[in-house]
Image (cartoon, rainbow, N blue to C red; front, side, top):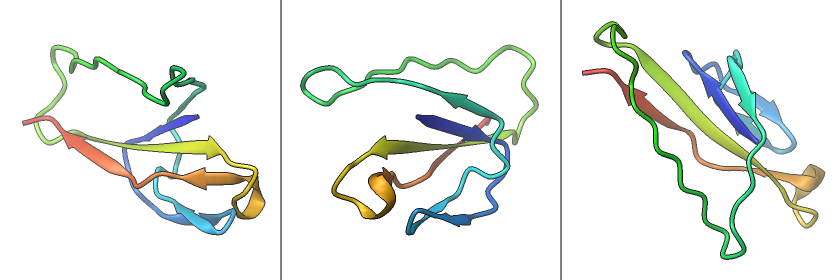
Length: 79
């Protein structure tokens, strides 16, 4: 699951921190057999300078605490 947010208010969940709170969008995605996922994203015309979006993946992981793992969060900012 890919979580997107315009802000980061970290919340503890399943033994980790979900940084993309409040969640704007949740996108269910799957990797290829090699575990890779390629996303091509382009900013829309008219997005104000300084607009930031936070991204973080939640991954099903039966060996992890709570059955899931969270990736590091990353941020992109419109120049």
